[in-house]
Length: 272
Image 1: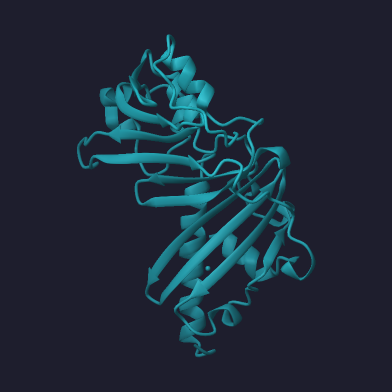
Image 2 (image 1 turned 90 degrees about the horizontal axis):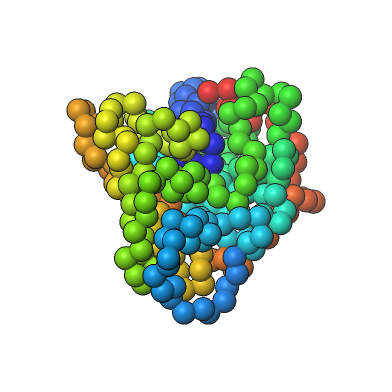
């Protein structure tokens, strides 16, 4: 589950492009990253669906952390609704050549910065001419700027869109809710996934079980979709987690010696 179509795919594409560039460089012998109240656990609600939707983060919430697991893709980050900002991070391991890439995007409205950390192959940053600092990206220099995400609200996993597809939601008590999501004919919902072929689910996509947990502070903490096995597609869980409300760092534009303009090598990597 991701903020918008292509987010996880963008990370994978960049990782693949970096691997190709790294292979070339190494072969050339150039050398060798809501509030925080203490309210009691919610009691069963007269309208469980409305109560669950009310727990989804919105623009009034303080900064918080999140993670999503969508098939093999795991995103982590921070959302700062007051600043219209989000930070998205993913780690990818490459086997040939062997190295690990940690890539992070920081987005404030339409502005975007990228930071890349490469480990496991000595000198790889220098070979690829990639700085270790934040790089300010110019969207006009990107082949397809739409593939680089923008801040798109305080619910990066689109949990509200998923919950709204349920005909009914059952309050199981102790902050736990269950229901069935209809993933079949909702573009917003389908755009939330990159690791699951919704079309391949057929009729099963119309009734996908989910479990949501709301914490004692009234904030949604987890939403888990149990995707069934269909054909060659294995059963899997899609999990969104929201936490550290009011404890996560506020997001600001990188400044001073923390940032520089993105070099040509960064745009080359983003071409995929």
